[in-house]
Image 1: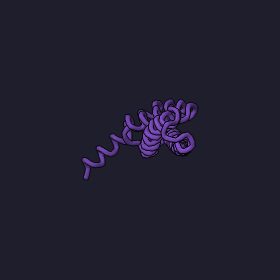
Image 2 (image 1 turned 30 degrees about the vertical axis):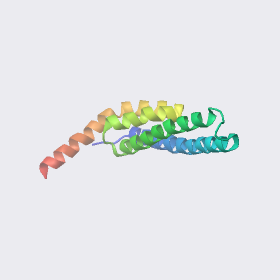
Image 3 (image 1 turned 90 degrees about the vertical axis):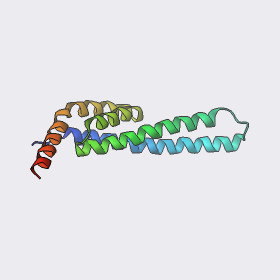
Image 4 (image 1 turned 180 degrees about the vertical axis):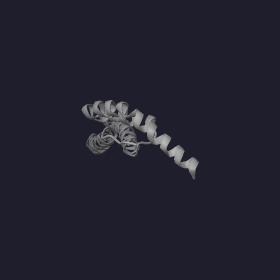
Length: 123
């Protein structure tokens, strides 16, 4: 069974975009907190908006990191693809490249699955 570089690069791009987005989310939520502290309880809608965007991006970042790990392991292609799509929301360029590489590596995920099934049947 021959392994290509596609799932490795896709997984690394997913993880990089997910970790970068987590850092951005931390800054967004910190900005929302300080905006609330400066403006008081009757402040504008900005703190709530920053928190909402931050929470949505945290979910996308966690999914991108998880998908990147599965892509590196060449397991569960559907979850790896979901992570690549989530990486699209985290970082547009990395997400597009990751989706393309994950789709092109689909047959490699099938080969690993078949090899594991045959190995389990021999045991």
